[in-house]
Image (cartoon, rainbow, N blue to C red; front, top):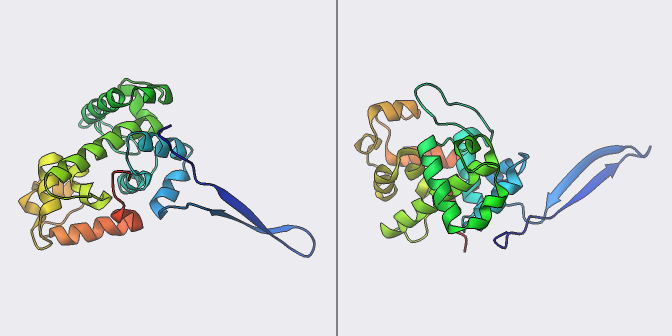
Length: 220
């Protein structure tokens, strides 16, 4: 779907003198970033990449997001105080809004997901559709703010703190305190120290994303 072509791979086995297999190495012809490989290691990873591509979103940027949010694991974290859950850590409201927007722009995606209701949050491949749409919205917003080709790192604050703070942080200088844009409670819950600067926060996020941090959100 969406012209997406899965990466191909070849497998090489090292054989001992007795004929037993000593080691097996699989090499991909289009390995992408480490973050993408982390996502591909999940049973839903390739479906996630395909869904992202169908929306015009770079799978590497999507993978960078799930690595930071959950290590690309389908974790259930919803509780009485928050509905945020899943591999992409989305609230029910954000998930539903983004999912419906994605399905409106590409109705064929409906055939690839398990449930168009809130319960679809529990399926990572389905949640991917909403997460990819939210990243696409972030990229569009940042482009309108003057960032010509937003990357996964550029969009991180938008995804984490919402459109207003996200846009401001993406345009801020490295020496600007994060506290100018994010409340003390949100900083604490996200492991951001009270005196942390935007530059320090970016460096921390980039270290988690790896090479995928510089991946553009929108597919070329």
